[in-house]
Structure formats: structure tokens, C-alpha cells
Image (tube, rainbow, N blue to C red; front, side):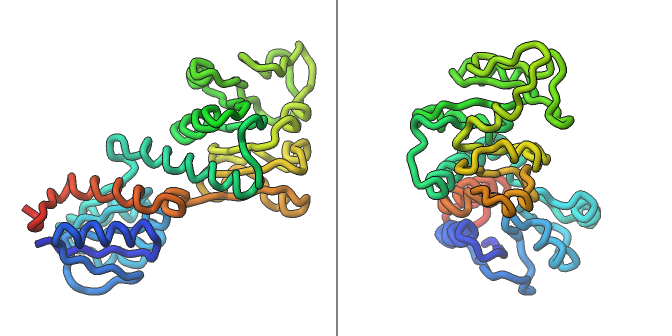
Length: 288
């Protein structure tokens, strides 16, 4: 019989608690450490570092700790003491499944923030990694006029294969573009040699989704954005927008973290449970 500690009062953790209990495990579910000696400790994915800092000195050799983005130095120190750390998002397929849930949550945030359908709207997706791809494909399927903004040429070609407009990202540098600095593929916005058009570019979209964890929408670029535009930022905190500028200028911008746990906590918990199960080999009668 396994003994498990689940920390973090979020919906995803609550469903994980129910799933482990259904497998006949002994599970403690709370928001702070309780002594007891555990086979595994499950930290909330969005706040792993914060919780680990409070419990690190209580972990014992042989225990498994599940979470995301463990602080490297702290995790390595405990590893040398015999503690096993499992990063959910580094498991095969997990990051893609999480990206799909994140994308669907981002769509929900956009509809709620914009109060209108996405079909027919001009939409910019910044970044075309896992989350950007999942998001752009869903927006396109809903009838959005989607443009992908990305610096990686191969990813731009992938976007074009899926019927999306693709724009090569450029460095800001006061938004002055040298000849050839902006490359546009399969897109109605054509940049002529030596012509400056960044203001026109940023101002054409009713919805902007950012997945890039850098300040890609500075005050200067945000100055060109439509005042009625909806900006949904799903990049890691602190995000990729100048939020002080957004607040000062009344822009409808939102940094959205933990979307899988917010909009699809049961599905998010199922993903975590299957990873835990693969390591601890759970059965209906317990750990075997």
C-alpha cells in the first residue's frame, strides 16, 4: 500500500487525490507538510518551486517528488541525498498534452475577455512552439484569420503547411527595419525594401496571443496595438508584455497562468496520474 502526500489547494490536485484514493492508496491532501513518511509527494505544477522551498529539508531518501520546473540547485542537492525528482512536463508526450489543454484554456480566456466569437477575426499568435502550434491550429479551425509570428524558419514553414499566414519575427530596435529585416510569407502584409511598416503590422489584429517568455510586446509596440484588441499572454511569468503600459493605457491584456488547472482540472489531473502510475506501478490493490 502506498502512502502519498498531495500539496496545493487547486482543482487539479483535488482530482489527483480522488484518482489515487480510487486506486486504494493512502493519501494525505493538504496545503502544508504533515509528518508521516511517504512513498511520494505531489507538488502543484504551477507552484513547485514555492512549495519545494518549504518542504525540502523534510524530504527523505527513497521518496519520489513530482512537480514541474524544479529549482536546479535545490533539486540536485536533494538528489545526492537519495530523493527522486520527476518533472511531469519532461515525460514523453506530457508537454504536448499540456499544450493542448493550455490552448483550449486560452481560447476560453479570449472569448470571455472579448465578449465575441473568434470566427472571422484577425488574430496574431506570437511564437510557434508546442503551445503556439496547438493554439494557432484551434483558432484556424474556428475560422480565425490567423498569423503566426516566429523567428524560426522551419516553424514558419510548418505554419504555412497548415494554411496559416507566417511572419518572420524581427528585433525591435525602435521598430526600424532595414532592407529585408522583415520577411512575410503567405501573408497579405508585404514589406517593401527599406519601408517601415511595424505600426501597421501591430495595429491590424483584434486578438493577440503571446507564448514567448520574453518582452516581445514592449510599450513601443503596444502603442500601435488597437485599443479594442484582446491580448492573452500564456508565457511563463512575468510574461511577454509591458503590463504597466497596458494598465496605463487601458489595454485589455491578461497574463494567464495555470490554464489547464483552471479550465480542465480533471483532464490535467489524469495526465499527472498516468505519469505517477508509470513510476510507481499502481494497481487496484496498491503498489506492486
